[in-house]
Amino acid sequence: MIGIGKSPLANFVIKYCNEYIGKVLYPYPLFFDDKKLLLSSKTGYILYLKKLVKLRNYIKVALWPDYIPYKAAAKIVDLDLLQNIVFVVPVHSLSDIEIGEELQDHGFNIFFGYASDKKYRNYELIDFLKAAKGEKWYLGVSTRKELKETILYNFNGLDVTGFLFGRNEDRKDSRILKKNLEELLRTVSKSQGRQTTLYEFSKLGG
Image 1 (cartoon, rainbow, N blue to C red):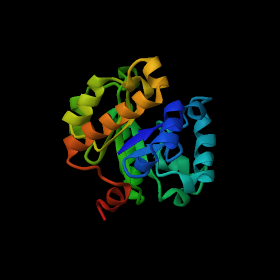
Image 2: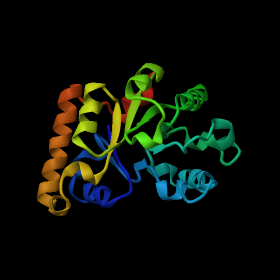
Image 3: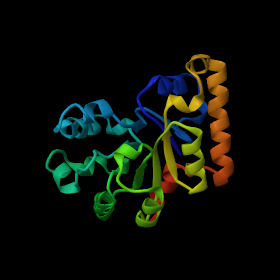
């Protein structure tokens, strides 16, 4: 399962890779991660949650707002309206795993999100793998090294940036970009045997 946040790459996938959308590739807004809104202010998560509710019928996977526990979010919106969305809970500190577990206790399907950038976490990958008991998502894959880690450690999902697909001029060439995207799909599918669909994931754990 590969998410693509709001970007020219997401627009490209919608235009040229329609056959993969909703099966393996989840471009924005199917994968929702409005970081600009989240980072707009300390209360950016309030607008983010309200936007989630507004667009809930178009979203399949979404980033859960950083550091926000279930109870705080429930004061902003009716979270029952978001039960059909699978959330990726960013784990900046291993204590953030509790946020994901609380969402699970309230019936949500979630991934525990591992941040590719070290400045957004205070632990090492091996610590995350030991502590997060459940489905895991690699956040912000932008290098081949990060992609290899995703495959080596059997992450269940990931989101990618355009930087994963080479030079800027290559990303502007639709033929080359589609070829590189299909290579990514083959690489991930080969390593996992097959891609887990959202429907299958939603059934995990009952």
